[in-house]
Each structure stands twice: as C-alpha cells, then as structure tokens.
Length: 254
Image (cartoon, rainbow, N blue to C red; front, side):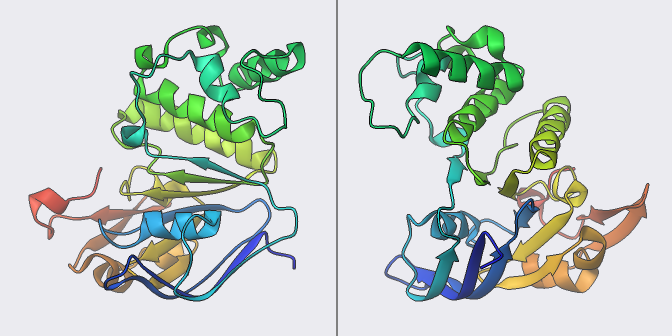
C-alpha cells in the first residue's frame, strides 16, 4: 500500500440517517489537505473514521501498516480550566509504557524541544487556561507530535482566532508539512485558509470534489457543497469565493 490511508465506499451513521455516504478518499505521504463543507456535512465524522474512533456502517478504511496518527481536537471541546501546565498537558499524550506521574529527563527534553519548535518554549510551566487561541492550538499540536506521527488530523484548527494568528498558524503547518508530515484538517474558513492549501476536499455527506483549489473551487462544486450559488473570482492567482448569496448566519469567513 503506497498511500498512508485509503477510504473506499465509506458510509457512517450514529444510528439514524447516514452522516457519510459512499466516500472514496486517500491520503498520501506528505499530503496537506483541507476538508470544507457546511455544518453537519460530516467533516468531523470523516476525521474520526480516519482515526478509527468511528466504525463505518459500510465500506473500509485501510491504514498503512505501522501508521502513526496524531489528532488535534477543536479547542472548544477542551476543559481549559483543568489544573495542568502546558508541559504536563503535552506529556499526557506519551504512548510508552511509562506511567509514573513525573517526567523522566528524556521526556522533559522531548517536551521542551517540541515547545521550542512550535514557538512556545517559554510557556512550559504556564497553566493551560492562561493561553491565547493560537497558543492553545500549538499545545495540542505538540501533544500530537509527541508520538512522532506520519499523519496529523486537525478539527477546525483556526476556529475563533484572528487573521494574524491564522496567518502564523498556516506558516507553522506549512513548515511541518515541508518536513514530511501529512496533514488533514477540517475548516469553515474557505477563503482565509482552505484556498491557500494545496489540496481541497469539498464534502457534504459525500465527496463532491477533491483536488487543487483552482480545480475544485468552482461555482458548480460550491453550489453542490453548500446548497447555494456563490461566485468565484481570482485574486493574486488564488480563487476567492464571494458568498453574498448565503444568509448571514451561514456566510463563510473572509
């Protein structure tokens, strides 16, 4: 198997109507993909199926032998009042047989190196509730990287952050990807983030289209994905989606 992970004819539900239907998708070594679609389109369920925490009702998810996967959840799902420091939070992801409550010197070095690599080396002893949105995301990337993954799955990593933080975060992900890490993330931020990724998957219970942004972000594909007509312009060589046809409550981030 050359792909890291391959999904074939996947369907999934939580006991009711299907959340995903007949999904075909593969993740290759070094891939950097953004999954876009409206709320309820199955983006998080697709990540969980890749991770193995959701069993398909039909179809298969095949992972390369020995594949290591890291997961970064939505920051809104984390209890940021939990009494733990940044370093302790990262160390909770250790997968070795060691379960002592204190860190070994080697583990301390590994955590410190990860935090330095992600630009938050000075925050190791800070309580997790004292972090900004961008810092929170970097902590959970550090947790995911602790297991030396081949692939990281990220659920809405730029939700609630400002434009400058999003820009810095994209640069960080690009650097990690250039060093060989495959990344798949979900996002509502179609213009601000997804159009800058090399590979896009448009999802609404099924894969509407997948490929380079210039090929995928078309009027027809977006209408099938979001259920409303949107215009697509080009700026600085990138597609820009004009979403004024959508109701205000559903508009995409700029």
